[in-house]
Image 1 (tube, rainbow, N blue to C red):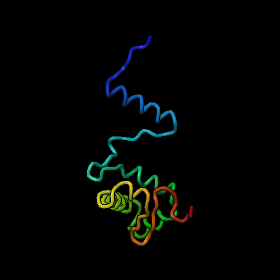
Image 2: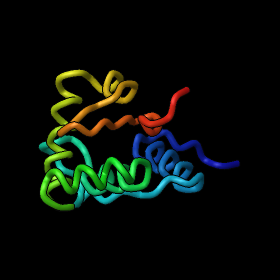
Image 3: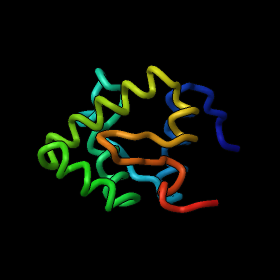
Image 4: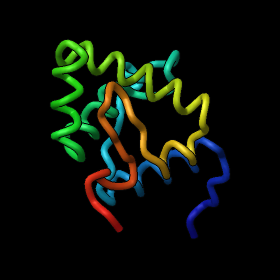
Length: 110
């Protein structure tokens, strides 16, 4: 009979193992920005993959990839603070004239 594990660390390990086994990637604590409350590299990777045209427009309008990543991270963090997570995730965000959606590409209609 297997011993029952009831510690919080064991619970966290079990959740992490399940997520990693089902397609999630492990993040890096080193890239997490505590000021913004998010991982800028993951945000940029998400935007590049899910909305490449919008990402390209933003990099051009904001002065390159690095500057765009920094400014977008701050903007998203500010939006989360002002509007709340649910509103930001469900809605559309507009920065420098470029619309971005989080659920799906803002170009699509449901």
